[in-house]
Length: 318
Ligand code: CO
Ligand code: CO
Image (cartoon, rainbow, N blue to C red):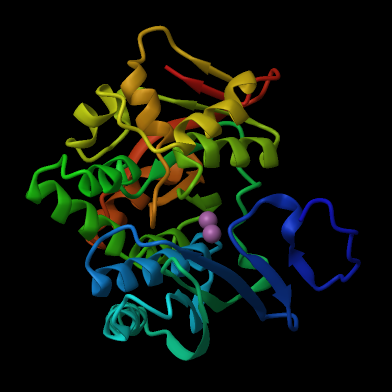
């Protein structure tokens, strides 16, 4: 989309030029629309759970902007032979249950015939134009908080190959199905500077976008990175989603990894997440209050690093 001619509309508050989570369009002084679309191939075998994960994932981009999601449109691809339509019905039921949990209304949708199942939503939300949480407003001195553990991509591909224990499989589905709503509501109650959700580009890829957009550098403390523990042996065995390598290629020139950081941990930080957590930048003075509020809201929030002035490099992992 970066190749498209520039549009000049003063009501576009966030457009496609800044690699942010969702677009924002001003309606009047106090209201703006937040809009996003996301759909993908199944990440779990159970169709109902797949629908719920797809809904939580699509809603997440609105939460990451600080918006309140209000309506949803479904988008589905489904084969015309070989699969029972009941599967699609289960996917949609799982998605609707998650939308209802988020108090979001499904308005309609569209299905096309395709050899491979794909499913997701376009979500519309509302936000006050002065309260948009961009990914490009992180300030030097800020601390960074992450609200879900990593390892989702490694573990969901591990499930496909039957390589992980049942308990870890349940845990990864539970993490993906958890809405970022509670985390976003806590974020809205505290003066935070910037946020994004960690999805396909992994923690490092999305942190890179935040650093680049904000004109700063981000430093992570690798020993504080939360991840689902069963992801580690898979990462050590080199069982990694393909995008771990492509994301690394994109950022390696601007990234410095400390000599003592294990390769497996670096790869967990590059692991593509489905319905991952929020990465939030805020002043250290507001940290304790935010963390205790997160805990009360049932969110496992962890400090993972901080924001610095840049001297050319964007990311450091110590
Ligand atoms: Co996003
Ligand atoms: Co997205």
